[in-house]
Image (tube, rainbow over all chains, first blue to last red; front, side):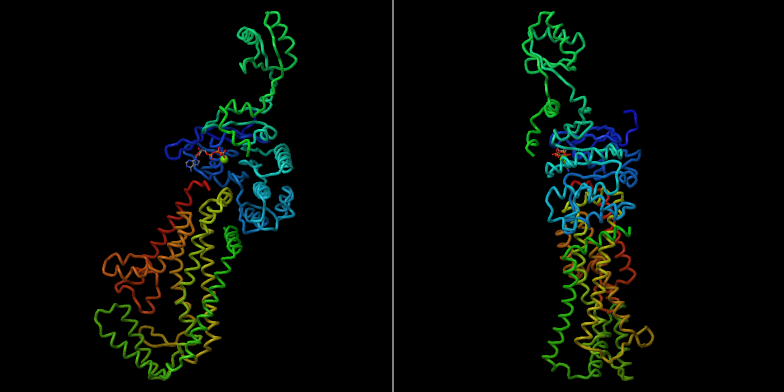
Length: 307
Length: 314
Ligand SMILES: Nc1ncnc2c1ncn2[C@@H]1O[C@H](COP(=O)(O)OP(=O)(O)OP(=O)(O)O)[C@@H](O)[C@H]1O
Ligand SMILES: [Mg+2]
């Protein structure tokens, strides 16, 4: 990506009391790209997002949106952002429509027509005149998305947006986000616990743990094909494969080889010639989830799966 | 900014409590006039004296008070004016308003301004705090609008609501006076410092109401500050109402100390300069205005600083 980044998170840090919650976070986000923000509970996702939209002041660092600093040019930079932080809280004593009207007045030039358009996009036209207090969680989530999209933002930040949506809703939501990313060039930043969800939705994944950005990966890269190989003697096998240029790692008493399927027969030939006994070779289907657990040390997010 | 106020106004009226308070205010005012009328009717033995006898008695009483040398300036001037007016009435046979009349109700309408304070405090203490407790604050502050503008729109909306309540107070008092007491054929007289002239009871009523409104402004700004700083509407409303009722009492406790001159509640009732009932003798209108202004600026500064700097984690 040689294009200029739409959003630049620069050296972002937050200290509360004596605890450093976010540690020197650097991340660029690009037009038309959906970036997932993944991390176990308490990793600092919500805190990062809060600082990105000016709800919290960074202890250090800044966020630039389209070149403008959230710290110094709040109005100009936030104009380009649509956001949902955690659950979208609305005025329960007003109708969904009045809530949208309320938020639309805080932006420049949003017409009634635009409000109705967004209501239709999120499929809320039948219930929009009812009080928000009577909405289900999923309906509130849809209304939350509507308020984030009202002003056609260039940059959309969503903190666990699918929480409460039904499967059809999640599916629609995914297609919709991919559509606005592709067609309108919106940069999207989504935090989520549902790893499978992120895998399907995102182009790129940033992984955060204990307030530190530990990895940024393209989803395609993660889905690269790997093979599991069980052979004896293991050390010699590893040496040979590494020697001919395969990325190899140990896994479960065997080896993981990163390569495309067409290179496998050749590799087997070489190993057989070197008198290595091969017991098994099979495609290794690591889901993103496994890799995520691998990266973050696992365990901690266990409860997130059942959410 | 206009749109922000429009938003706050819409939210205010979407809550039932705002309607209930305004209706309650009208009902209380109406029924208090009705009860006064009923009480007077059932014991109409009291009104056997003529207005001349009443004026003469009051004048005599005021003259005795004036002999006291330790009287404060404002109080002295007021009593002298009252005596002059009474003399004028008796000499020229100009009757005052009946104490139960539409006109007198208008003049006295400010007396129930504390109801307006009470209801406004409920709005002022909750208008910021509720955004935090509902969690809507994060939706509000992630818009391209600076925080101070949002806070200003909330303050202005609170004051507009207070103003509306004050107008309701004034109108309902006048209407209830008209219905229950009727128009009295007396004349309103004022002492302008050198002579007795005819005055407008409407203007007098409005002037006193406007002066009482300063009290509404101060207490609700205080509640607004507490609600903003502590994000708890119950704390803000409770403490403000407590002070509304006890703040003035403390003036008497502090009366012998110098600090009483800089104490908020010594000054919140500006009608004291017109009705002569001074809480503390050696204060002036100018001092009161300065003290009130300083308190107001402090309340506002605390509100804006805490609201502007706060990390929102709601
Ligand atoms: N106001 C605060 N004071 C002290 N610590 C805080 C505060 N807010 C958050 N933290 C701490 O900061 C860390 C990051 O919290 P954050 O809410 O950003 O995590 P998260 O990644 O969004 O987690 P989750 O996946 O559960 O939503 C946590 O350890 C939390 O305890
Ligand atoms: Mg979170």
